[in-house]
Length: 98
Image (tube, rainbow, N blue to C red):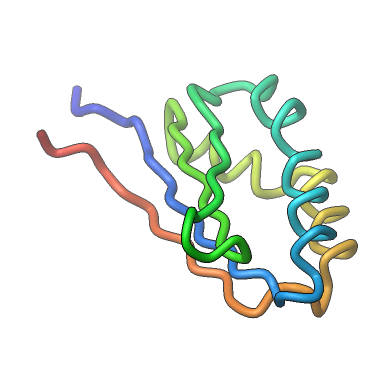
């Protein structure tokens, strides 16, 4: 059976004046998400050159379990709390090939 593990790289670019709000809301997601079924790791990074740029590096046991995560209430709360505060959001679903 092929490896079903899914890697997610999510790039969040906060508006400069909203950086602290976005960072605070992103940090709230970490303990809840790490406790979810299928979460292997859920790590938040901040760019050293651009403090408005955040990157989540996530690994999930399967795409189905990641999809379940995406429907959770805490993500809806994050979206509501940061509405209008994020300049750009880019998500990549990736598969380990080597």
